[in-house]
Image 1 (cartoon, rainbow, N blue to C red):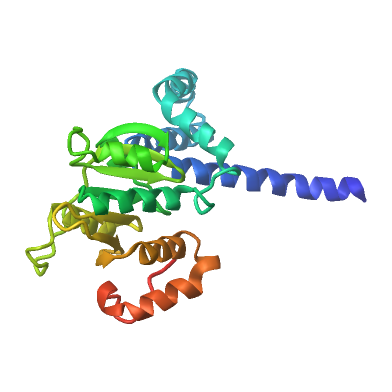
Image 2 (cartoon, one colour; image 1 turned 45 degrees about the vertical axis):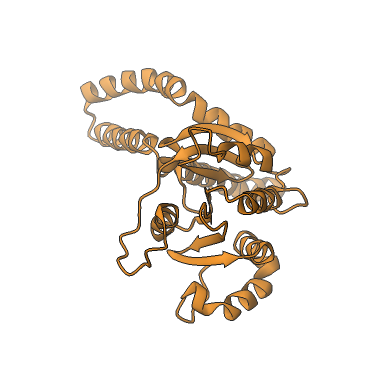
Amino acid sequence: MFELLTSFWRPVIEILFIWVLIYFVIRFFQGTRAMQVLLGLVILVVIFLVAKFFELNSIIWVLSKVFAVGVVAFLVIFQPEMRRVLARIGTTMSSGFLSKGGTIDEVIRACDHMSRHRTGALIALERDVGLKNYIESGMMIDAKVSAELLLSLFDPHTPTHDGAAIITGDRIASCGSLFPLTQMTDLPTSVGTRHRAAIGLTEENDAVCIVVSEETGNISVSVFGKLTKALDLEDLKQILEGLFKPAENKNVFIDFIEKNKKLFQFHGKIPPT
């Protein structure tokens, strides 16, 4: 009986493991130039299987040699990306995104300081849709999130203060990154370049963008292409916690949205989480 159960569950576990592995590989490379290489490899694998089915020996021989060299080339070319993802897997269990002194607290602390000193800033927090293309447009640093580091990145005397910082998990993935500007024509003239870049990015994906105005010191948040201006620190914390841990903070987040529908302009709909 035990052997029968083992023979039944073993292929199920193997198939599930392979499916999860392929899913996370695709998720990791999605939105990067490496995705094009991955798609090319998939096409070659399909050609190889077709050649094997029709017994096209010459094609099989050529592709088998390409695969032998390709594995080594893949490991060499994408060694930095593989190192980062393995390090991220190792720290997943200890990630403190919402813990006391975690990512949200550090971001809020940095925004508070920059708001009081009127230091302009643009910070994007990655959610489900990858921001790898935008990360690659800036300077990749892969450093743990801290208020002090964010303040140094947006210091007006540094070359990175005009770009955006991108946060992935509990790491600052890049600084000085460039975002597309929104094409909306009905925005008031008081909406500056940072705000337009925040709206432009969140129109394309589910990222959360925080903007600190250099002129007024006001803190704004852009989600799903909608900009909310002049937030206090408590409102900012509610939004971030509601978006990044909706299961535990959903009621608080919904209450906040209901009270600020005109600001969010969600047309009566709670944004998807």
